[in-house]
Amino acid sequence: MIHQQISSIKKYWLWVSLVVFALVASFLSFIALISLWVGLKHIYQPGSWLPILAGAMALPLILGLFFIVSRRLLGYMKEKDLINL
Image (cartoon, rainbow, N blue to C red; front, side, top):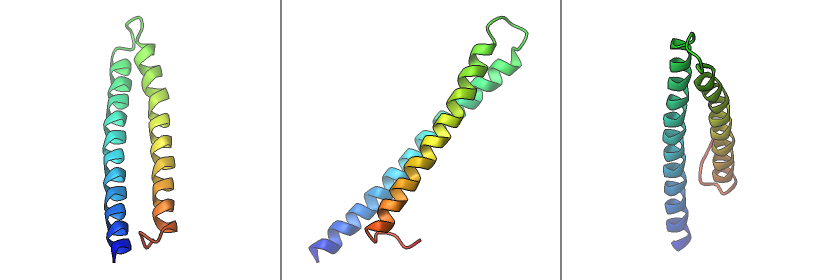
């Protein structure tokens, strides 16, 4: 019975951590998109390449990290029989 309680608590916290990580990744992606938008809006001003470069480099990094971490968390949950996918 204690094992079932521990696994249900672990399942809950893994889902919560996945949702929190998704929210953080979406916020950082939003910031990267704003950086791209500002750089493209002011393309004729000197130095406008910097926000374009920062947004273009940050967005794939954030999304790639999100997909790697989420796949590992879901794989761990499936391995421990905490999820039925």
